[in-house]
Length: 304
Image (cartoon, rainbow, N blue to C red; front, top):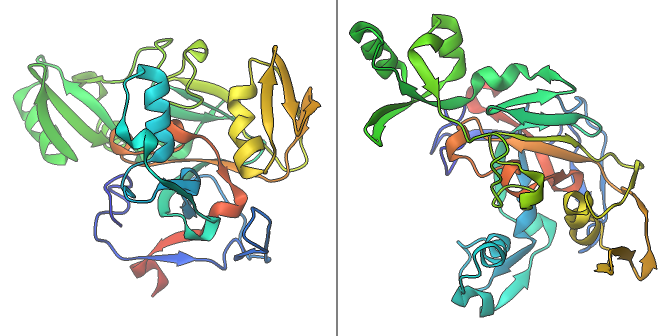
């Protein structure tokens, strides 16, 4: 592990095992997106921790590999602040050469997913693994001193911000100890759009704490295309499923043809990091195509 996005389940410098057999190993047929997956022995489940190739690593800067090409482009489109990297040399990377991410599997193909006050809901049911996530809270001044001390000791991290004591702590600790009355949750405000979150449109009024509902695309499923929902599917159609898409006079053209619907060629997934406030996950770039998934992540101790 090279980041803290999956703490406390998986920590920096921790050894992990990627089980490629559980879901079946993927095999790229050629340098395009075409692939096949061999049979596995376990279905993908909500809450699994998975390893996958980062979808937005399809294009990267040749001499600035640490920078996210797509993020730089979106940043310019949002702020109109020029970045010299916009003229830097870029390269295309086949799926197997893209950097590997580790995240928790939140939504499966066909699921209807939403985020409310930082918590995930699947098909209108609160996801059980919400309890594993680290949330951000502020300590109420009215909390008894001994309770404040106990919460600080159990917290993942503490710091002061805008004069208030901030606590980042795993949600299950709050639930098990009934500490909710001593803390104020720190989440973004509903209907305050953040154009750095998927699908990067202020008209959706989404942010990292409030998103959706989103129906996760399923292989073989046909969706009606509109000017309202095309931001959700454009990258799937263009980048992951290798089509040419243009919009002219509010008409969607796919490979030069007027297209009012589209049938997905692959299954897609939604992932998140347990350390929510410090995780770069699907909230910030969208769906994970099935051909990017490597396998299930297991701790080294789990394999003994």
